[in-house]
Image 1 (cartoon, rainbow, N blue to C red):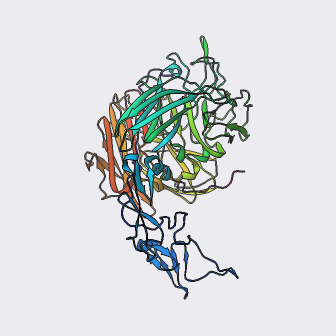
Image 2 (tube, one colour; image 1 turned 180 degrees about the vertical axis):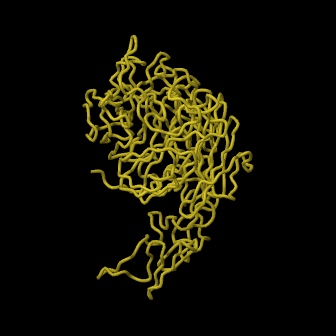
Length: 625
């Protein structure tokens, strides 16, 4: 059955500390030696002679010092840098480094007691970082994570129904991750695609350090409907209806749709512009009602979608969908595997929605865009969503004793901003969601694997046949798990978790579907700040950490947590810690990198989000064909 009255899945998420503190002490491996890059005084890498092109000696092969006898020394392993004229040194001659808030220069002898170059002007908002005076936004720009100074938000397509969630208020939460006040501007473009921009500021707000501000934004539907809640809307639509959010200092932004704790809703943690990429693989879910249902006065039909936002001028975008796309000029109806090519400007939005399903379509893939490929010649933001859906849908899962086939309620809206392929990893710790059932039963989580850009050999601690498998780019594998497990792969992949509808929960009506993208272990952090919203029956944080490591919540070791083994990745053992949280902002920290996912449950809704992540470019995918 369709549920129109669920509690909101507030987007409360988040703030991964961006490591914005100033660099301290002497220079270290990786700092710029001469202001132009490289690890040594003349740059990194093998150095060649003038005539025959043979390597000179002594030389630096990146961080390896090679003398004229062919002996090599790994300078980085000693916490040093390689300088051809010196060997391994504390710093490379001429390199700039930070001492407090001062920029100093390394001496010709490779010692960090060289002359003062510059004192960073604190009153101008400058901090010494990696040998240069920078603003907080410049520092965040150099350290891609979910913290930044420019974001793109979109009023993603909602279900059309009696309660009209598409017309309901939606908005963003702005959390200040810096040390000073953040002045935030939110603007839109009133010109149609292809025309000179007509920018309009819709909000200007000041966010104090450490504060959270919620802002309701005007409805800007992306489905080319004549009005919100238009069941006859084409769905697929090319518009210029994105929101640009800019800040004077680093912030965390998340959007929630709808804004209030009512009926169909979900949330998305937004990625800043410097964390966006050029290639994306889609992980999503089937639409709840992909085939029209005749209903008095209207035909009920749900669609899933891919939404691409332009952020740079003249960006060519190609979308290769895994399921057929409904056409709406200038976008032609496109079969699975066909290419949709458009040129986007900043604020432009390409919203691609699934075509009507039929009874002859395979139930496992009908109106599901998982595995679709998006690539562009400049960074874009990409979202995956479903107007409304039910989980587990067509997939068989274990059920509690006494469960009946009619206990499948309820549907809910899903949306998620995708991590670029360039930031995906090969190692994952997948912690299960906090158990909602009573009586000792554990409802399963639905797990999705999607191949990213190259054929991947995957090993997990799941039971066969998902303990070991090969997955191709764009291939989707769906299973379930009632326990924690680990994933290792020889190529980057995507792993997502969906919570099941409340009809599959034993003993109480609690929660509903939600979608979480797990960051890889490679993007774990040592500090996070998250916000747990009010109006929820339960709030939790699930931590994946090394046994014996101390994870502090709000400055003290976490207590009241249930602990369970999670598995081993690259010889590092992890455990899950399921910790209850009170409403409000919370800071989590440890001396070792760890991961977190936050969850909240209400009587008919839920939220879930990764508590933050680095979004470093750690993978260079093949050039799209």
